[in-house]
Image (cartoon, rainbow, N blue to C red):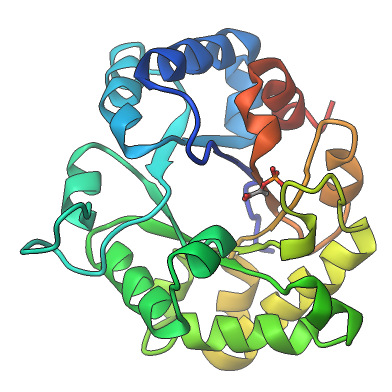
Length: 257
Ligand code: PEP
């Protein structure tokens, strides 16, 4: 039987400077004990400018907290002004990188081909992509959500091997539930997370489907996390707003209690 370790990943978006970042990670570290941090993998995803400070704190105190970035360039180096590459993030000790967040797709016009190239770049440099898929309100109202997410998934995983896909964390984030306070019901989350796992199994084999972690994201809080985590195909959450409050994020990590 495959055991998928629960993962709670805090996407800070464009919030907190490096001093605030240090304060938040310190608070998290003393709000959570070793058992809690071992049971539930806990990860922060700060802005690029915070990563060095977060690395220094986590390494120095051997904290059981992981970290990663919110985006990366599809290229390893070169004339791409303003971009940050996979090798740079890997060298800073990042384990994860978010790819294809709906805000990047909407505001930076990232299409499926770009998302696919970024997933491949992350894997090539030893980073685990947290690949976001999710439908907008119109698609949901027309009942096209499963097909939409499945298509985004197919495009993003194009050309990968089963071994690579197992390293990808897939996050189902319905766009209508991000930052809106409108959480999908646990049943809504299960429907798409289950369909995502089935699609991975169809394309990359049953074992890969069983091993791949699928998260839910969209207005997750300490008050709704337990219901979402009770669903069989939800292996964790990608948390925006609520991850900026150390007490609240720690409560989410302690959901089994
Ligand atoms: C997100 O942006 O990944 C997210 C889930 O945001 P929020 O929790 O604030 O809805």
